[in-house]
Length: 139
Image (spheres, one colour):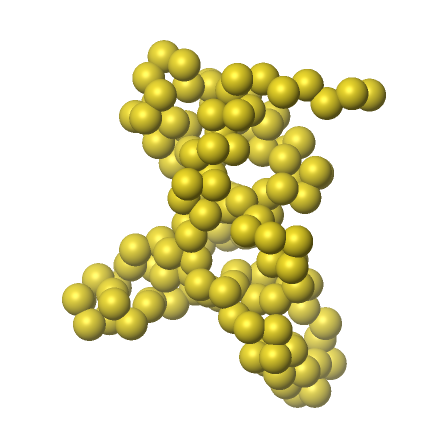
């Protein structure tokens, strides 16, 4: 099956790439796309379909959301982005990348203490970045 490249898919990918340091729920994506693209923005069902396809193509990463009841999505910055852990600031929504050595050390500790293997591709740690702690934003 050949991949079709729609204007809506391009619009969605462009938005995600321009905001690669953040993750979004489907509702947040729809609202942001409507704000930036107006009537050209894809509808909610199209965004769901496109995000499912982009996750399958490994262009977008899906995480359990902050509430655990929804998913959060972000574009993969590079091919190595799936091999380390990420942090999400609850204040500003920024995504921070942990380096491979730090990720490996954390995962080894979890394995050692609880004999539990963590899926790096689906794990996002929530907290507050230094800027938000200093500025008083505490998600």
